[in-house]
Length: 137
Image (cartoon, rainbow, N blue to C red; front, side, top):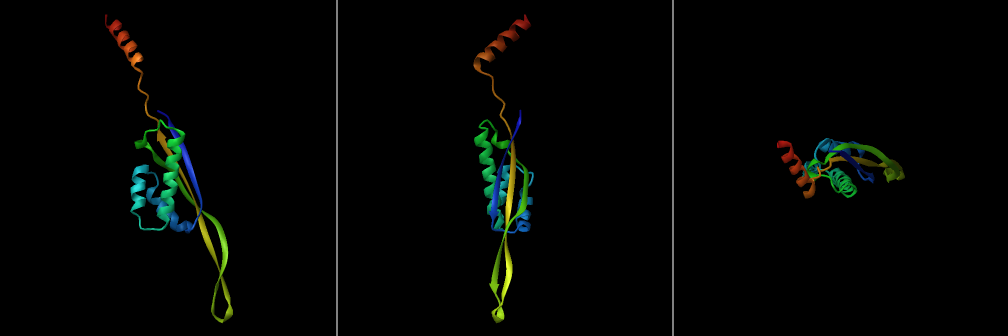
């Protein structure tokens, strides 16, 4: 069996990288099926973005390698980095304007899965049985 990898990269999610990385650490090194259940029941806004990235990476793996066993798909790597910062201003007292930044985050998810073992064809089985019978004689 050979391990296959696929990834997804979600850029510019509207959540702080620190808050998103807390959610990402909940599902690090888990199977994708378990991670989806955890993220669906996590009451944080960043969980939706991480769930979208995990499902996208899983779909990429299954489309790229159709022979992957879905039970063996796990999250190999997940990381959250800071994205673009947009500078804005908020009105304050006495006609002032106070600056603030809207910080986004980038989510990278890499999943790995094992390929299913190929079952031998019926003709190959017959040849193997004949060979085994001849060895017994």
